[in-house]
Image (cartoon, rainbow, N blue to C red; front, top):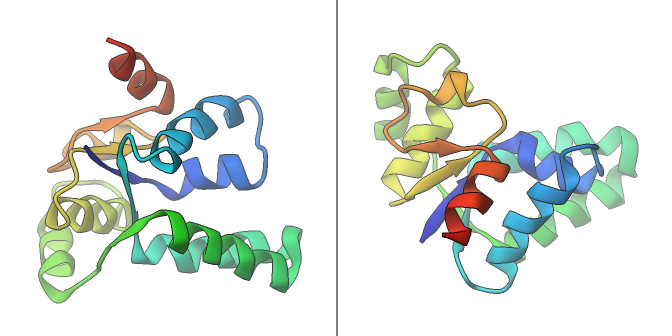
Length: 137
């Protein structure tokens, strides 16, 4: 199954943000063990670098991006993705871009802590906790 990660879930792991770290790490470990294919929207990588640079330093932020690139495939942002996001009935444009990039890349799920903004996504969204429970059945 292809799963696309929202920026917040990756940040939970990279920055060890409690109480979210454990479940986010468990879902990402499913990708590391090749149980699922992980996807990151290309904009997530630039956001990750920007948001982690202050805490991890430039070298640490670039290493975090490199680690993500090694583990995950990319959900590209293209003109059709942006056109769909502009027209999407989603309240947050950045989330709409991620949702439509995930859809274009063939994702089966989006992993996020922000279900409300993904309620009208073309790809169903789950919290890490929900996804772990679903995978256990």
